[in-house]
Length: 228
Length: 303
Ligand SMILES: Nc1ncnc2c1ncn2[C@@H]1O[C@H](COP(=O)(O)OP(=O)(O)OP(=O)(O)O)[C@@H](O)[C@H]1O
Ligand SMILES: [Mg+2]
Image (cartoon, rainbow over all chains, first blue to last red; front, side, top):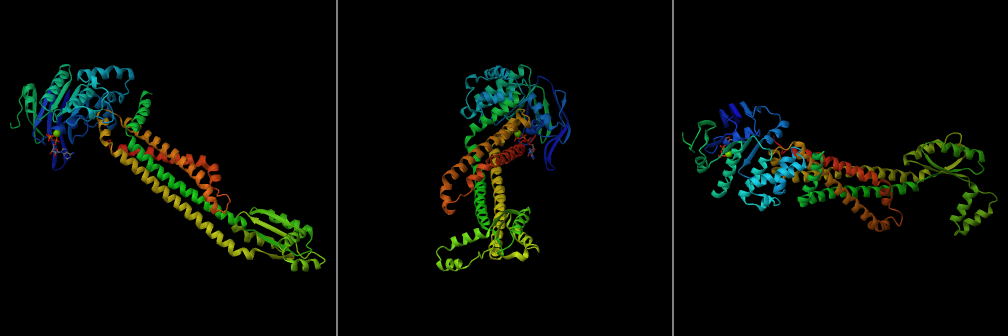
């Protein structure tokens, strides 16, 4: 599903994001990426969504070699991978419904399809009654659920979550994690970057630990550790 | 098709939901357009003043009395044949005498002296108007050719010479200065307007990044901004047109006092040229703000 072959990302000569990283993530996996601040977790996420280009190596997603992806092909890639960030990244001047619909509109979806799918995904995240509110009228947890709803409209093969619960309390964190697990159960590959020890330990799934831009450990049923 | 419609609808929704920043931009556009239009109006009035004086200029060639009628007619046709000539009027000796008597009707001495003469002492006159003030010397030289020279008693050109040259100079500098000022104001107006667009788009750089994040093509992101730029320009042009109309409607009667009651030429000018003026301003404003929006949005579409 996701293949990194000897990938490096050097921002400046003295600022290395990733250093010679190779890994495979199979379809349907739920992988946690952990590591200290500056270890290269966000860099990895940005490379997967083609926001950054690797300095060396090869990246493949779902059989698509995106190493040298052309800028005009990037929108197509973004429609195939859902992305979730710590800051919710909703369009403030659009309602919940419009925010979710936007992801379909950009792909030229038919209006009928939009009116079918958007309420469905809002229901999955439990926000069907918030459809006509604006993001500022929602709590942080609700906003993050809108983001998840938006990332689901294309039935993405990969869901990329960079600290999705970073700004949330324990209860909201639990909600979001339940959602991610549920989405994974329907077959979507989930790559979860997190600092949250409890979350990682509760999952009991594969854990990749990064350190100084390198893979320090990769355990199939791992726990949250920073020292290897 | 559905995409075109969505971009169109999004541009309006975006304008409505960001009303203040949109109106602020329209305001800057309008001020820029207005300052250019005020200058154009002032220029028109100055031109009118210059034209008014230019019109007063003519050259009168007075012939000896007793010059044969045929030669006068010939001289008239001769002058008329030049492309530089606007009009030539032949004043017969009798008409000249009548005009002279009329001018001096309150001066009995002159009239008395005149009545003692048995014949009309005045000669025929050619009153020549040139299309351009610069052409008077040429026309005078032309009429003073050997064929007519012996019959010419005097020409009034020399009296007018200084007036003609100073009006000519004034007109030249008014035109040069005026168009220079319009150019400078247009430039500054455009810069201010486009900076307003850039600022408006800068405030939305986050949104642009988010749109990109969820898979919007760059054209789909730019579309609404570009169209909104066109709407803003349209609004500004309409506001400017309304303001110019109101200024002429209410202001012109007042201005006419300075023209001692005669026409200021502004309403004539706008009636004749409003279509060109409106659409050229609209085309420049809309075209360039679309272009500036396109470029400004592009700066925030990284990858
Ligand atoms: N745009 C950039 N320009 C230069 N250096 C960068 C840039 N982004 C990241 N880096 C550097 O790359 C390294 C990895 O950064 P990255 O953001 O991937 O860390 P992270 O693991 O996500 O950290 P955190 O847990 O704090 O989010 C850091 O040393 C960082 O300073
Ligand atoms: Mg990070």
